[in-house]
Amino acid sequence: MAAIERESMDVDVVIVGAGPAGLTAAIRLKQLAAASGRDLAIVVLEKGSEVGAHILSGAVFEPRSLNELFPDWQKRGAPLRTPAREDHFFFLTEKRAFRLPTPPQMHNAGNYIISLSNFCRWLGEQAAAMGIDIFPGFPAAEVLYDDEGRVAGVRTQDMGVRRDGTPGPNFQPGMDLRARLTLFAEGCRGHLTKRLEQRFGLRDGIGPQTYAIGIKELWEIEPAKHEPGKIIHTIGWPLDRRTYGGSFLYHWGENFLAYGFVIGLDYWNPHLSPFEEMQRFKLHPAFRPLFEGGQRIGYGARALVEGGLQALPRLVFPGGALIGDCAGFLNVPKIKGTHTAMKSALVAAECAFEALAAGAVRPLLESYPQRLRQSWLWDELYRARNIRPSF
Image 1: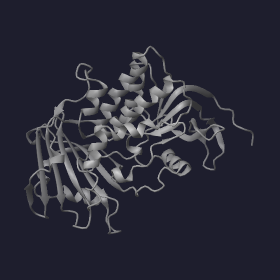
Image 2: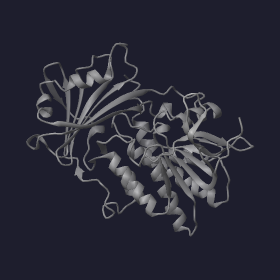
Image 3: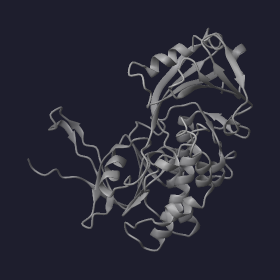
Image 4: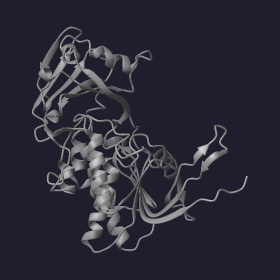
């Protein structure tokens, strides 16, 4: 079989993933370049058909990193329109709900209930307006390496391939995007991240990562039952005491209810179905009336990284770095990872810009993990480091 001819593009930075971390890194790089009178060619690859297509909506968002990225985000029209107002925390039995004191990590004063997909679309609009190239519908399929073994960019996925792997009549080869630096922001269990971890031994001597499955539904409920800004978390039923997990219900927008159920993937019962447990929850006497008369208008699921600080891999390798949830910056007791993912991207972008401005080509960003340890992100994860292992 003849070698496939591929188009190639040389840029300064390739970012894999247009989630909160990937877009934040691109924007901060462009901000720093503009402030110093330089120009950086930045490409962001997004596997979804559009920015936000692979983001599950309904999240409580802490704006700490956004304040650093865009202090004027309100003037820019960021879609943060439902302030958090009430926190409720319940322990459930099959028939009753006992309200408990809200854990300090779950106090949400100053936070917002948002559509995370809409937030990413807004970030994408800000990035595009700054001259950042975003390529939706182009999954990154392979990591490229140079002659010295450094990461040299990525190759996008071939299109029009038959089931047997041979090119079909509509075959279009993927493009090689070669970069001075490549940042990976693939989210939980990214396939390229797993290959990088093996090639560069990023997990050698690191604690094992742990995961959960989060299943979400978006409901439009009856207006009389809607309380914008109300946040509910539960533990207990329908799970037994040997299974880690719980639910959340967020009232936001125009009669929207974001309902989700999270179960740790270390559950002991092989017959347990996370989806069926989620559906059972809706029959609890305390919450069934909330759903009655409403309409489910969206649903989905995603994996969550729960290992915390002890399970963070080494973040850098020659020519690139890991940012956001593919590294595992979720704060488990807060059940929040967007602000931490964005902070990791901010720090990585600042370190990357310094290296690129000095003329580096495919450097090892040693300053990135060092500066993370000096940031509020590290302090936050350090304080929460034993919550998940204690279970």
